[in-house]
Length: 145
Image (cartoon, rainbow, N blue to C red; front, side, top):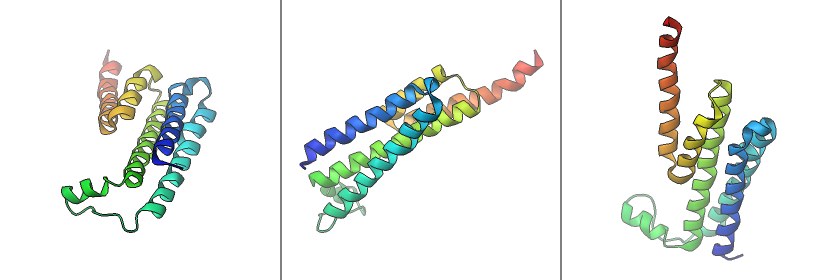
């Protein structure tokens, strides 16, 4: 299968996982299983396969920015990098949903975090952690009133 087809399949699969997480209040166990386990594991297996098939003989490496750029000039390695992002960002999103549920954080507060995590990874994580921290800091104030 060509890299473009694999890109499309993996991206659509990841989007199904994000949709499951966004809809998680409707069926928490099923959506967490799909968005937090099945799809990230499937993407991870795809990533491992891409690396095993494409890594040997690929130019570049991780010792300098120039070598990383050279490494990602190989379409299958660039695709592996993309699938890596898809899998890990989805795992972070699943953790956010699971943690929010455990801490009784309203799902509507988590949705912007999920969107940012999908689009910009660490920014969504920082927002989620900030919301959690703000809630923790506000809790003692709410008890005083």
